Image (cartoon, rainbow, N blue to C red; front, side):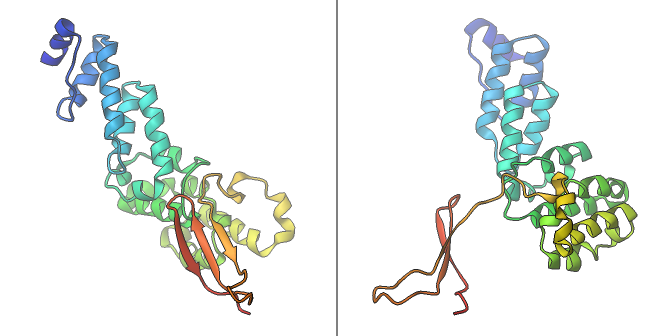
Length: 234
């Protein structure tokens, strides 16, 4: 490859999206570590929500440890947008599990994890339905609202067809309905993830005339935005 020859004579290499997929494997094959690092560093600058999953697979295939670590963390931090990409439904079962089992997923709620998993399953339902129990076991069903569990999860036709899936949903409903038994439910599927979004909520206060307020506002530190919530019922 001309780019490798240029590197031998000049010590420089030009990396682009047009050549990186051929250049990095070739550099790895002939043990040109400098070119491999240059390719990896280039891909680091190109990662976004639409290509991170493909780059992660490429990095793992060619043992680019730093690039693989970066893409795994990027996918977790940008989960909500990554799961909307075309690449997401092309993940293998193992790759999907690797993503949804992370404690540091940045998500608005656990329902988004469930919705993304079901989108993946229904993309090829015949081939993927067998994976549903293992995927559902790694979704924190118990932290979802009871309404979502009963109106959405419990009514899904693929879940209703699986005894193991129905048992997992029943366990989650029992968590809500029997708080006296929660001390027995120590598995991590009964706990919130560490990476969920945190918000600052400001309740009430006093107006300029010192009258008490019933307003409620929420601040999202990730977006630096304030939003009004329903007033207190007073």
